[in-house]
Image 1: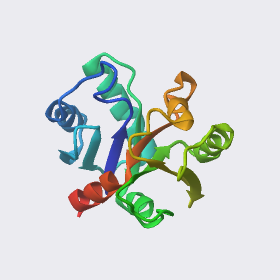
Image 2: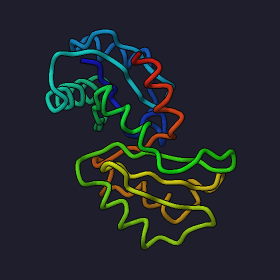
Image 3: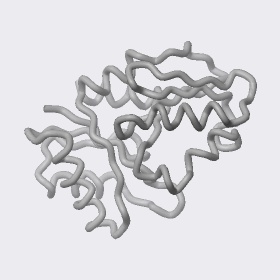
Image 4: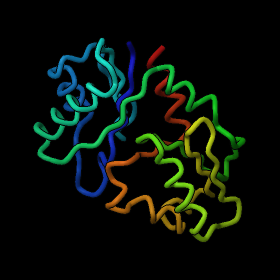
Length: 175
């Protein structure tokens, strides 16, 4: 089965790694057809194992190799397609749209945080198919009230986010 591993916190805040090295860790852990998409920690691969087992194997392999506490989220090709097909907002050159990949139920936690955060004009959030989507004006992602919530230590093992354009690139690589 084809999967994508979405790594959290890669190439930000001092956790730097080359995607070629990450791909090698995946290969050494028994994954097949391994390749990366962008430098933000998206690894496409094949395996006969289930997602839960893969998460344990790959987090341990990444933690051991890079000497950091690795968090990653595994989605099948079909699940990744759902992220792309469920986008609730229309593309707009002035806005970023993010989809959040994470543990079951994290979408309601994120919506709760979004609802109490102050918002800029055109900043919106929606849950579709148990996926949290966030639209924010370009240039406001990290400065927004909700954007600051995303770095909370209490949430670091719960989710990661990707711009919707990244999902499109991942799906092309999976095909």
